[in-house]
Length: 457
Image (cartoon, rainbow, N blue to C red):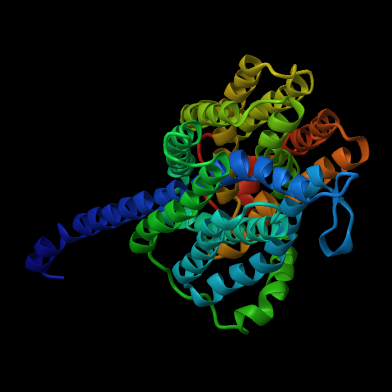
C-alpha cells in the first residue's frame, strides 16, 4: 500500500466504526419501542381488565352451581380465566418452534414479528365486542392474543445479542423493560380517567372496560411500526428444509444441541420454574384482588399503575445492582423478595387497599429487574448464530411453558374455592427456581457457550 493510499485509508476505519455504532444505537432505540408497544397488553389487558371482566362474563353465563360448560366440560366460572391462559400457552408452544426455525432459516425476523404482533393487536382490539355472557368469545380472543405476544417475543428477544455487545446487554435489556413499564403506566392513567369518569363520558362501566381493552390493541399495533422501521434482518442461516415442516425437528435439534451446553440448559430449567411463578402472579393478581380481597376496579388499576411506575425504577436500579454484584446474585435476591410477597399476600386482609398498595410496591421493585436480568443473562449463554432458535426455547420458558402456574392456580381454586390457597401454592416455583439457579456456575456457562465473559455476571 502506498503512503498516499495509507493516508486516505486511515480515517476510513474510525468513520466505519462510528457509522456502525450509530446504526446499532438506532436499532436499540427501535428495539425498545416494541416493549413500549406490547407491554400495554400485558398491563392493561392481562393484568388489570380481562381477568375480572372475563370472570364476570363467565359468571353471567354460569348455571345454578356456578359452572360454565365450554365444549361440554364443566368449569367453575372463577377458574375460566386461569384455564384460558394455560390453553394460550399450549398454542404458543406449538407455534414458537416453527417461528424460531423460520427466523433462523430465512433470516427474516421482521415479517414474522409483524405477523405475530398484528395478530395479537387485532385480537385485543376485538375484545371491544366482549359483552353480556360472551365468555367463549372472550376466552378465544384471550388465547389468540396471549399466544401471539409469546410468539412475537421469540423474535424480539432474539435481536438482543445482535444489537448489543456483551458488556451492555444488562443495560439495554433493562432499558427495554423500562420503556415497556413507562408506556404501561401512561396508558393505565388514561384507563383510570376513563373508567372512573365513565358516567361523565356517557358510558356504562362495561363500555369503559371494553374501550380500555380495545385501545390496548390499537396502541400495540400503532407503536409496532417503530421497531419494524428501525430493526434490520441479518444474514440467512445455512439452507435447510422448509421452516414449517422442520419447526419441531428444529426444536428437538436445539434441545439436543443444548445437551452440548448443559450449563445453559441448567439455567433454562431454573428460569422455567421461577418465571412460571412470576407470570402467574402477574396474570392472576387482579382476579385475586377483586374476587378474594373484594377490591374495586379503581383500586386494582391504581395498584397496577403503582407497579408500572416503580417497575421503571426497579428495572434500572436492578440493572445497576447487577453491574456491582452480578446478574445472578441480583436475580437470586429478587426471588427471595417474590417469596415474601406471596407469603404476605396470603395473609392480606380483605377490603384493605393500603396493604394491597404496599404489596404492589414490592412487586414493582422486583418485577422488571428480575425479568430484564434473566433475559440479558441468558443472552450470554447462547452460542453465536443460534440466537432465534435458543431464544425460541427461552421464550417457551418465559411464556410458552408458563402454563403450569395458571393451571395449578385454577385447579387449587376449583378444588378448594379459595383464592388464598391458590396464591400460596405458587411459592414452590420461587423456592425450587432459586435453588436451581444458585447451582448454575454462570461464568463457566458463558465460556462454555463460546462467548466472552463479562467482568461482572
